Image (tube, rainbow, N blue to C red):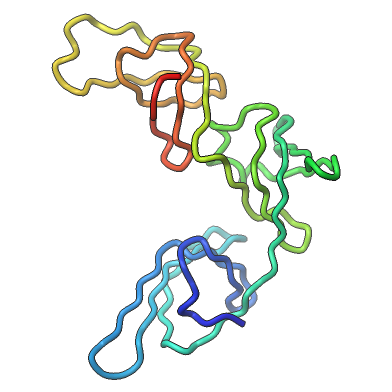
Length: 185
């Protein structure tokens, strides 16, 4: 059991038999009485988001998570396949779990896989990833008066908003947390 004061963004805990991930956390201490902890959490099985209020001193069930460094191998219509770098076991991860990160995954990229009782819960990508631009519209001369941007397509199929000087064949660095352009490499 962990105290609700220890809940922070990203913490996974069990509530009413469901695994929840904290998305937002706020601590409010009124002039009188106990502090109030408000969280917004996502159910890891259903994807539903809930808001919950706790009183200071309440406790929730913590869970034991296993973290493995895995290497992305390939994907098919249902799964993304990763290989554990220590045991060389292949771990299939459902497309729904990886969907939001798929545009940043390159073959042989190492990521951190979170497991609960042997079942994949989440993957954590590096903060930035370098991707090759495979399609970029040509820039129009004279469009540089303001921060003009354009969409480019990278090797993984993702579309990234970049400055107009980025050309086809360039390699760009992308922030995987926000999906935004960082710099040209």
